[in-house]
Length: 133
Image (cartoon, rainbow, N blue to C red):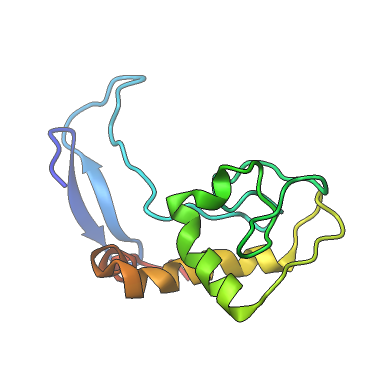
């Protein structure tokens, strides 16, 4: 990444950082980025768009996970995990849509593992991420 506002650097004990090259003005855009994996945070949501779902939400025809609409089962970002869940014959059962559900915690892991198979370049970026444990 190249920018006139910052430069990449490294601090022992902290890891990779961005250092400002000049004073940055209030409300000045410093960095724009997009997610390469969109994932739920543990609460029941539509796996196509991450919108809210309820007990009356439609289910995906293939994997049977709740979706916010009849359109989201065809979402490109839902296709890979849908195939895994459908081929495994796995069905999620949700009793309370207002609370976190443990099955939604596996979706982020699954999506990242699927990147390794389906998009090696994006997965290479995952491998470059630093942990801060």
